[in-house]
Length: 241
Image (cartoon, rainbow, N blue to C red; front, top):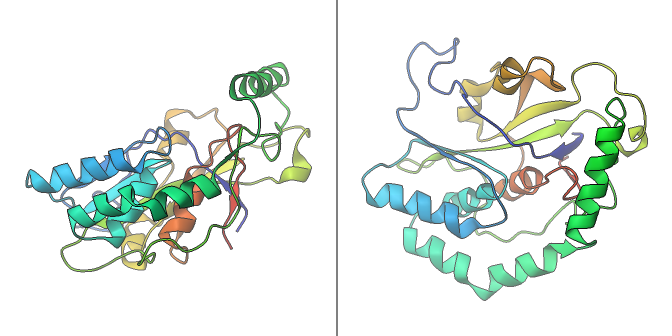
């Protein structure tokens, strides 16, 4: 699979209304937005929904919230999720994996200015980023396979596949399919998502988002989360497969 970047997604995903599925598969979905590597926030939202009696059938997560979803996928007990997120093991994992490479403000502003000055040129997204994370991170959770256990919510983690590589940086943009939305999930949930058209491209028809989407069922939740947190310009992309 090609390199994967995260995208900021405004979602209207047809999990409950896919044309190929005549009956609703999920009645209640919990959608978690991104915003920094703060898994405790998303764990709190998931635990709070369950405590209030709103057990979701499916959790859709992107960017930083994908880590909280991965933890919830691994620990069915709400207290166990919190204990893990507070543990020295998880703290050390984050501190050893995420590294600050360059001054934040200057680097981000320089890259945005360059992209704005060259709107038809593919920007350099593969090096000189603010944060650096290994393409592959080690095993950290006791269960990293997307769960299909009875009584636990299905997990869908979103990222985007970049349909270009580092060697293309600085080249002229061609076509309108530079990025494709990717759904990471289990094989059963994948049947509902295959064939879903991109709501982002529908809302922004002149964008560089592929109208088609892809579904991946062979990745772990940690691999999916690694792909999902990779905001362009901010962090280097991750590779799956």
